Amino acid sequence: MSAPLLELQAVSHVYPDGSAGLDDCTLTLHRGRRYALLGANGAGKTTVLQHLNGLLRPTAGTLRQDGQPFDYSRKGLTALRTRVGLVFQNPDRQLFSALVEEDVSFGPLNLGLHEYEVRHRVAAALDAVGLRSHARRAVHQLSFGQKKRVCIAGVLAMEPDVLLLDEPMAGLDAPMQTELTALLDRLAARGVTILLSTHDIDFALRWADDIHVMAAGRCIASGPAQQLAAQTDVLQAAGQRPPAALALHAELVALGVLPQGPAPRSVDALLDTLRALKQSGVITA
View 1 (cartoon, rainbow, N blue to C red):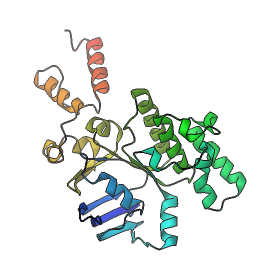
View 2: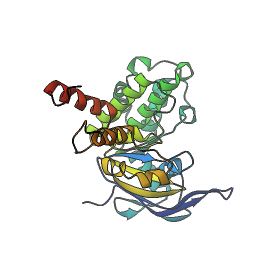
View 3: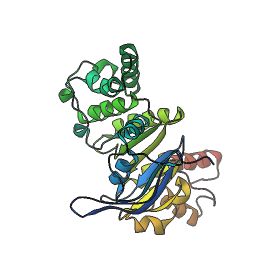
């Protein structure tokens, strides 16, 4: 396998007030993968994202980019933030322009791009998040979910290789979560590496290729989503319950309703399996 796109090696971080944000944390991101950063509130998920984007610098340990130690010079940070976009949990921390299109164009303009290229990127980014018709709207008139999508558009306009999202589903209703998931799937299909933080084990299992599990400022486990989500001891150590789909599947197998085999990655997929078995006559009740 090629060198990781981004890697934290034994990174610790102590905030100015003396509190520990990370403690000997190691994790890697490889190109084109979908990652969930799973953990309870206060586990260090946001601190990890801010190190991967260069907003925070390790107190100890190393950030590596493309296999090389990261250069924290102004030039290095500019290059990193061009390739690695971060979307905060609270959109009001990220939005500062009066109009939607002004906010989305801020990053490309700072790259010194030609006006035509900036307009093209802004239009494409707003199309991607379904807000092209809102280009001239005032940011303060938008809903919470719309503001989140503007933040994502601002990052997409930079055409990053990596997209980092801090609790992107927080504050969104079910239809908005479905729309955002579809957007993330489209970006992943284009080859964008995505890492999002969440405390929702069911979503992590359903969506991610790989899961990193955080507890007390440390990445305590990493691996393919379906394998890691079945490790109840790891989940318990991170304050997580087993995924509903895996727990329900295990119960149905124990009752003899379902045969032994790999568990579906969501309750919806499990229900589809049950319906298919009923239609085929395997289940008669």
